[in-house]
Image 1 (spheres, each protein chain N blue to C red):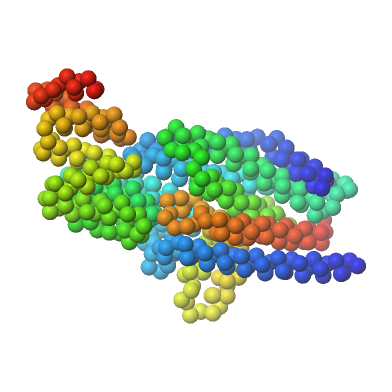
Image 2 (cartoon, helix red, strand yellow; image 1 turned 120 degrees about the horizontal axis):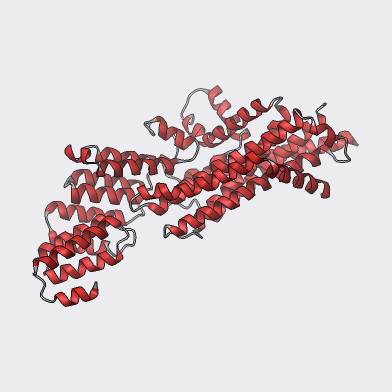
Length: 257
Length: 235
């Protein structure tokens, strides 16, 4: 456990040592504050607009932080060969991967907390409730979705050979993850069995990120924020992370360098 | 021993994957039960690429917000006034197609269409669309009543409904101006002036605050107030 935490700490510090990531965090804070300017245009719907734009900025910058911090890690491991130095140390490959995962999601969490504080401040300035339970729940589930995506990213990093291919795969998973529910709905009445099988495969293998997307249901009069649904999605998220990381560890153990 | 360990791991992974699939299925089913039919993409919904892209990445409200700002700019643009804001209903439909539970867009849009542009049928159609997507949001039925009374010219019943509407914290500011204009015809200058003072103090809309101040100045300047000192004191 100590070895895993040591790797996580190293990855976390390494991410913040990198200037590009810091610039991204500054941009993220500015984006959240930019919602103040946007809301000036939104006569009588300022609070809604500040929340919508803030939640959008939080998720998109959390995703970009994940992509950037992992790109830096993978680049250093493969191009600068830092992985070789780590492999000769008394640490299991699986411990390294799990530590890396924890380091990355802690980096994203730091960014997310800073942005959440800014969004709450902006909402307060606009006369809204900064402790709105729906808003905070949707931020929590956005983070959960990013954690699931990070586990997928770790798995993809073990199978992809270059950094650009890994980035392309991840963007593809992000878009497809939001679409799986809709794709399943679209092919529901389709006669093509092959198409249905392909969509089913995508639906079960790709992370279903739409389940974590509560930010576009803040005004919903339905019971999307009910504990039963939230617990089910939380359980799904945890299981997806466990399965992805276990598969990643399995592949990484077999990999020859 | 290693083979045994690996086999156990393999089976554990498969079991976890199976449970995960079941949970995914159950959560999606919950989503389908909770969310209305419009939530999911279908062959008949979402007429433009912007909406499909917004749905794909889960940013539907952001698209509705952009459409809302466009609608406000169109409504405030003098060029739009020249053609009587013909595209107003189209703008409102674009907003509510992107986010059908943006309830303020229905009340705000319908109030503008009915009370400012006097296009009652369009106002009724947008309110009815709101009711069909948000059946439990009872305020829409209330606004529908006000629009129908306004269409029929039943000022008494309309005034009663608008006074009730003022009690909701999320009423559109156009209601405040509309009620004030009715008071100017049906009530004494003192009562009307007191109403404008109240609106000046409580409205959240800067434009309405400016409008109420102008109306107050106009009433005071006309010299029709019986007790001007009361109004001036309350200012």
